[in-house]
Amino acid sequence: QVQLVESGGGLVQAGGSLRVSCTASGNIFIINNMGWYRQAPGKQRELVAIITRGGNMNYADSVKGRFTLSRDTAKSTVYLEMGSLKPEDTAVYYCYADRIVTAIPYWGQGTQVTVSS
Image 1 (cartoon, rainbow, N blue to C red):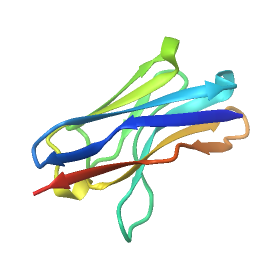
Image 2 (cartoon, rainbow, N blue to C red):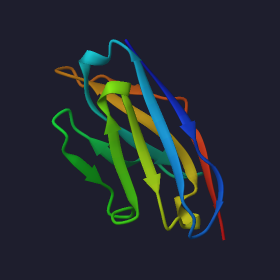
Image 3 (spheres, helix red, strand yellow):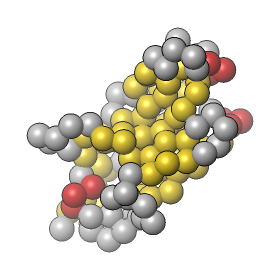
Image 4 (cartoon, rainbow, N blue to C red):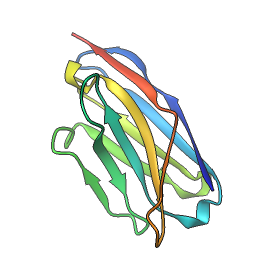
């Protein structure tokens, strides 16, 4: 099993920056991909950014150039630096990881990010 604990998030004005972090614990050696999804009110959960076990990163088109995903392997932590934030970035941000071979997903509890106009 893998547990994901998020931190960060909060309220920020449009154009501002924010960082969210996610630390994995438990059987971390089974983790394949790790990253962030978000879900805005009334919308489906969507991928924000993800890093593969090999270090390749993928970003949603809507955040490219504004958000940066990074990983500290020693701390089993991924960070999402969010810049030039827009009101449409307002959502609950969920940390995500999946298991090698089976791709079983693991989710954090979610952290609210609110961008005011």
